[in-house]
Each structure stands twice: as structure tokens, then as C-alpha cells.
Image (cartoon, rainbow, N blue to C red; front, side):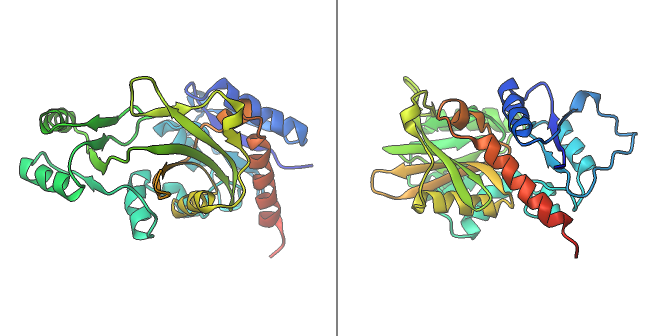
Length: 287
């Protein structure tokens, strides 16, 4: 009998996410155990068995702590190693740059210093620039600033509210791709189209925009980004410029994988479960 999947959820996890994971488990005879963060008792000792499967689609601080409480080296997860569970996602852009992955030029501002801000704008090639506040979803916290006056007023607000903004070079005339990576391969890719009257983009509702990609520079970059954040599953955002250049924006774990499955018809949940089951078998092999 295959091992169960323990799924760490809370009220923020879309019902579609858990439904697709539960259906994938049912199709393979895997017991689906939902771990509700709101009902988890940290005073009770919970120990998963060797080879059990563990995944956290929830993104809250409490959900991360529940996952860490359940984790063991003998449990199959999407982490490349045990200490990857404690990886600081905010450090990802620096890690990408040090690995030579192509990202838009980025400067993280640590204080509200006008002289430093002018130097950063010059270093990044001038205005317009993108200001990003890490931690948002769906483009929230990503702003396009086209004048010095608008830039400094936004930075004043961000620093006053305790945020650490990033300035990034603006890449116009580019297609925004989301590539879903599992293990060492891209299992789905789709275009994100610009919202009306906005520079930001969102996922397409046209099934024709979704594909199971063949190996390419785009998929190779997505796999490299996933490997850099020490994960075996991620939704990777990449800009493909008209010149042919690629710019890595971010690698998200967890990510909203149902988009590719519900609209594009690609069985991402099944591929996720297959990966965890294969890893579980390796973990249970005699050593």
C-alpha cells in the first residue's frame, strides 16, 4: 500500500488545490490527509513514518511552522535537502545572480537615502523602473515608476511602513511565461497576458496558451532557478524579450499549479504525486 500524503493547509489555500491533490491521490490509491493549520496542536507529538509524503500549499507563517514540525529527513517532500526547509526566499535574487542566471538588474535599498537612490537609478539604466516589495501575490507589490517624483514618494511610503524595496530594470516588449517545474523537468508552461491599462500580467484563460514544453533555453532556465532555491517543484516566472533574451523574475514555492491543470488540461497534480512517490521509494530502500 502506498504511503499517505500529508497536505498542510489553511483558509488561504484555494479549494481547487486540495481537490486536485485529493483526486490525484484517489487515482493512485494514496490516502490524502489534510493537516489543518488552525487545528494543529504543537503540544502533541506527531511523527510521520519513513517514506510518508508531505506537501505544504499554504503560505502563512503558521503553515511553515507546522510543516517544519512534521518534517523528517525520511519523509518525501519537494525540498532538495533537509536544511532547504529553512531557506530564506527573499535571498533568491542574490542567489540567482551569483549562479549566473539572467535576472533584471536589481538593487535592494536598505535605507531612505536620496543620494543612494539616484546612484541606484543610474546603475539600473534610468527611469522607468520597477519597484518590488517582496511577499505579495498576483502582482501586488510590483509597481512601475516613470518619474523621479513618483519614485521618491513611493519609496518614502515604503520605508515609513518598514518595507525593504527592490529597484529593478524595466523590461518592455517581453512575454511573461510561467513555467511549472517538477524534479528536473518542466511539466507545463503558459503565457501571461497584460491586464488592461496595466504593465503587469496574469494567466491566460485560453487553453491554446498552455503547453507541455519540450526542452529549450526557457525550460532550462526554469529548472536551474528551481534548483537554485533548493526545491524540486516551483512556478517560475520568466520574461522572454523580443531580442530573444530571457530574464528570470522569480521561482515560487509553493505555487498555484491548478491554473495549468484546470485551463490547460495538464495533469500537474498527478506529476507532483508521482515525483513524491518515486522519492518515497528511494528513501525506503535499505542502506
